[in-house]
Image (cartoon, rainbow, N blue to C red):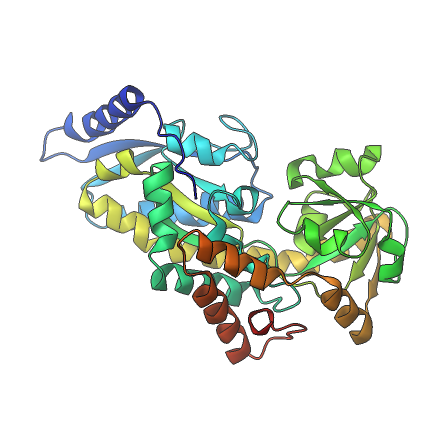
Length: 364
């Protein structure tokens, strides 16, 4: 993978000096206040950001309060205040934010190892399992963390996902995959092949733009999950859903700017790492709770109708896709990364958990 350009060295030196000054300007015997800016282009209805604000930050604060040595003065630079959606990666890299949630799904070309869940659809709709297995991949294969540090000046603390099960939401009823042919369908990017394989015209998009894009006809349908459809009211312009149990994905990583991270006291670093399970657990809870409430809201407010695909249709859709897993693994192998090993490890975990696998991507 080509090495990403490094950020301005002078700017990083200034950022590191500011971080060090924030810690060092208070007498050692007093509580030290550290200023940190957390960034995201997304608002709190996005589960990964709601969990950051309501679970992660309070967990860090609570752990630090046990000794009283340090206190974080948080600047919550979310909802597009500092960066727009897709801008989180560069924002943390260059120091616009000290930490942030990177949407790995938007940067498959830069952090491709996180893309394994997108290359194995029709496998699992258990977001807790997907988050846990992604963490296991990160812990097992050092290449995950190496890419962040070497190419993007970042330290990754934890991954998670917000998608339990992608569904096809549309302006008009869809009751068969044959009806998808010719439709303009929005998708995050890595899952565009899921719909182009059955004849759709794929349009790369993001959740923040989806309502307006569906409402104005930029695309006629979108691959989105139940919580997202409800929270962002996408079921108003797209009140029909076709559920073929496409499955869920990992798509997020909570990262720190590495220069800022290096300037933090060990106690603060420990609190930051120890609090990541609170972020992951709350995000998973919001995804799962929102899946039920999201559909209920859509049904109550917009008359949403959900059509469930037959087993035959689901299998037909799965088999229509190219060998995504094998292609991904081979590309990673050529780039010097353990693609085949990661793909097999991922699928082994899913098989061990008795997931509803329609296609064994590592056995092709």
